[in-house]
Length: 165
Image 1 (tube, helix red, strand yellow):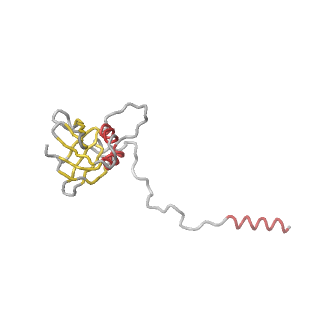
Image 2: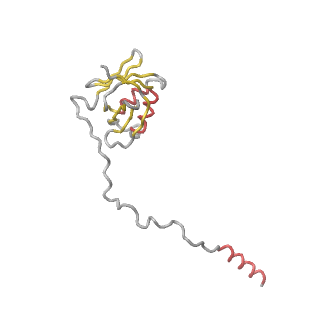
Image 3: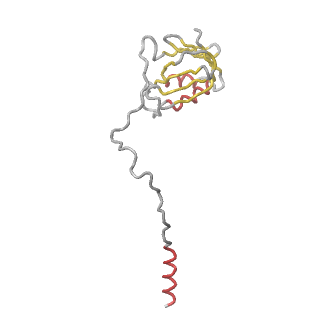
């Protein structure tokens, strides 16, 4: 296992917040696939929602890693919640697992893109067929071009003329 990545637990847990769907407490926990992509040239780890790529957060990391690893984001978030935010984590990757090490503790998470599993291919969300496109007349100004007459002036004149009679 030469593929090791070092980062802070708090940074990774903050990056996971947007990639996970918001659920009520009583709802059953569903798998939330997350892609962890490492860009070695800039030493950055991107946390991306795996199905549609709707959310992406980037954080600083150091080490060597394969291009992309997919894991269940909900399980990863629960594991990271057990670690203090300033804890230095080591992420090790092999063909079937992602190991998270902090000192003497080691936790293995199953990879979704392992040799036995099937990787999730990211595709953009489809547009709603009921959507009619951009509204017509969008280039027109929102406010009228000529100023409107003030109505308070007319009301004041009416009050004065009634009192004078």
